[in-house]
Amino acid sequence: MFEALLLVTGLSAGCAIGFAVAWARSAPAREELAASEARAEEQERAAADKLAYATNMRRELADAFKALSAQALDSTSATFLKLAKAELGQFQERAQGDLNERKREVDALVQPIKESLTKVDGKIEQLERTHARADAALQEQLRNLNETQLPQVAKATASLANAMRQPTVRGRWGELQLKRVVQLAGMLEHCDFVEQPTATTEDARQRPDAVVTLPGGARVVIDAKVPFAAYLDAHEAADDDTRAKHLQRHALLVRSHAAALGRKAYWDAFEPSPDFVVMFLPGEMLYTAALQQDPELIEAVTSERVVLATPSSLIALLRTIALGWREQALALNAQEVAQLGRQLYERAGSLAAHWSDVGDKLEKAVGAYNRSVGALESRVLVTARKFVELKAALPEDGEIETPQAVDVLPRPLVISTASH
Image 1 (tube, one colour):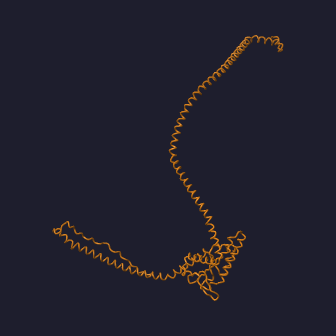
Image 2 (image 1 turned 180 degrees about the vertical axis):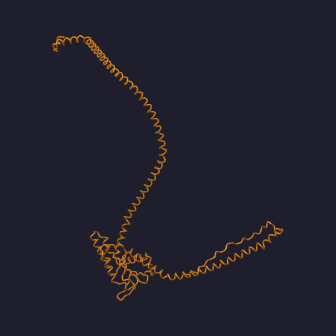
Image 3 (image 1 turned 120 degrees about the horizontal axis):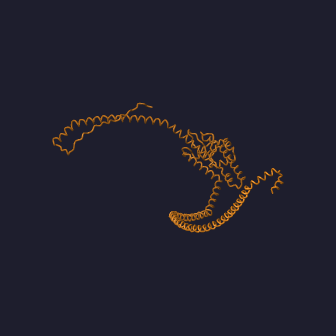
């Protein structure tokens, strides 16, 4: 074997001898190495056996632990469930007791509310029954109204409309409205205004509806006009075109009434008077409807010396005239008021002099009284009190009191000599 190794390695003889010697010397080491390898293999086999044993023991312990855990879990679950059922039962009992207690408390609190709600429900039912009866009665009244009253109202309205189409009725209504407006403004008949006065001129006899007297003697003539027929036709029209035509006719009637009124020249018959006449329209709607259809209406009637007036504007005009009357009355009475003031001042001065004389007399009377009190004390009462000392008078009769002197004098009255 050694020679084969030499051949294989190709070493020389010397080298071979050296190697052989080294090989021979390493024999114990080789044996020790072999023994170590054997022991290592034995230990490895022992370790493998121990590992296998430990693995088997681990597996067996795991199985045993699983079994014990399952058994313990079963026992613990049963015990837990038993305890849990017992605790749950006790908790349910306590909860039921608390619930019953809370229910009783809630019932005690809710009972008054329940009773009140019951009463309210009763009242509501009663009100609903009353409302139902009232509603039924109202329906019956409305039914009766529709059956009886509305036809009568419609008939009366139609009659009124037909009456207002008559010139005499319209004229009388306008006169009554004018008189009412004048009275509302605070005017007094036969003093501040005259109703339907008559004046005669060279051409004709004039008779306006009213003449209002101005401060200073001037007079304003007022005449009422009621162009109502065309306005009623427009109100009863079935379509817009027909209504517009009637309203245009209404505006033309207002303008023609104003022109005719201007031609009468009332200012000549009732002098002194401003050179215009007031045309009174007894309804605001008459003026508004005419002005909407004829925007130049005011300029047209003004050129005829006519002033259009509705109830509201005429009241404003008449109240302005009444204010002028009050101002004139104040101016006329100013001199008399001044004279009365002078007389009052003189009489007040005379009365003050009399009061001053009374004060002097009172002061002298106080002086005389005080002097008589002094004489009474020093001359009379001193002697009178000696009757008590002489037993001519008893103490039970009372002591004579001394009158008190008066130390308050009248306040002097200062009379001023200044005059206005």
